[in-house]
Image 1 (cartoon, rainbow, N blue to C red):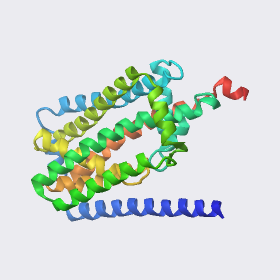
Image 2 (spheres, rainbow, N blue to C red):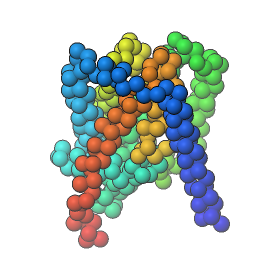
Image 3 (spheres, rainbow, N blue to C red):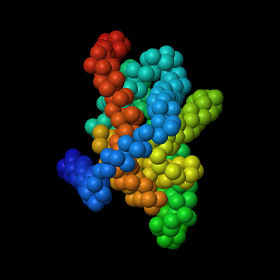
Length: 316
């Protein structure tokens, strides 16, 4: 009966996720249908004075975005064993590839476990949670600031909603910290905090710095992509909108492989407040998806294809 209930929950969760994604696609389709694509505007935008400079900066930021993630993982995994940048690259890109078809990229955890001994699997999962968790904290923190800032400029949400949001977040934090038997990916909070405390502070500091750098790089990827299409919005306003988009879209359950639809629908709504062309918003969302996901997956697929199990794993 318990197995049946679990399957029913999984099925219901899948239906909710598919519904959210379907609504996102529907919203984007309707918004774009109202304004036919004007190629002349796009061509004019791409003929700007600094186009080639922007393209070079965007490509550099794309490389840095993934490279910083590789350095983050190399820094954290040294708790188990020291690995090279090349080995970290293989593990990170393979994990991303294995995570694309799973809800919110949870397959990424299994992807990294494959490179280690069975008895180290739990530690690898915990380290990956720490790696992603710090990134989530930055996304929530700066995302909330972005939402407050954009709402201050355009008042798209009643102020009382922010009070409700704060109360919900405060209640969630209180419940998580007070209920000891809450489990995250099979680990109790007590065991997670204990393991975090055992990791040297030097590693934590480096992880915090690298995570901030990666978030900064991601925000500027968006900024220069919009500059590429001649969108004239002040830097901090645009970063505020992007951080809000990133928070709101990431808080909804989805599949990474079609992540652009969800982020695109939220971006169309928020950037629409500033009069940005819907087609430009959709194109930028698609380009970000291609640069940050499709390209790494293409490379990661090769690592997965030629993956050879660790000898220690084979022996078991």
